Image 1: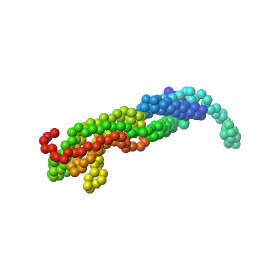
Image 2 (image 1 turned 180 degrees about the vertical axis):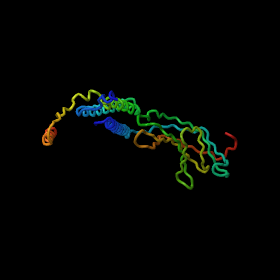
Image 3 (image 1 turned 180 degrees about the horizontal axis):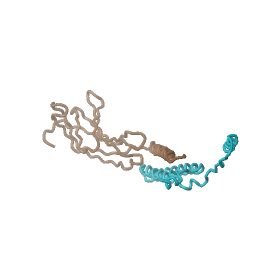
Image 4 (image 1 turned 120 degrees about the vertical axis):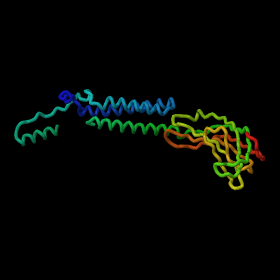
Length: 97
Length: 160
């Protein structure tokens, strides 16, 4: 169980943006290529299949939290020890950042 | 986009939107095409019989039999927005009761068998088809070219 919990499953902010952008690009590209190819051979089913391949590829690349979406982790403020006042100040500073 | 399910939902929705756009593009690319083409129709053997029609009643009715030749090339009608064509042959004739009577036979018929009053003189055969598309309209196309013929005045009693 410890081993399972040690597997990182999150994406950082930049990674989420990259994943979404990448999935849009892949699906749009496959859709455009499929439209052109389907028009050339006059088979709309081929267009749908190519779009489906693009969907599968986008799913494989952008759905699992691959390590490449975890390159810019957020640096959290260090926890402060002290009374309530100081903790509030720390929270404000954290928000500003 | 912070969880696997959210990302899966997002790309599925986007892929389906793209599919809808592609289907619309396919429809737009074929909506202005002209599907009319020539058809050569000829009748070989035309007879009229007076036989009971058990599907309607036991009374005797005039039954026209005709064998026809049909020659047409429909291959150029097929494109990426045509799944299949539904072909049918129509016999048009005029009677004292109605100015326009139409009898249709579905596809795959080699031997037409229609109820026709023997009083009429001119029967016109035309070929038409429905285009069944992937997306878009379901047009009813009439082929250019028809064939007119007459049924004989006397009944045929022998077997064909």
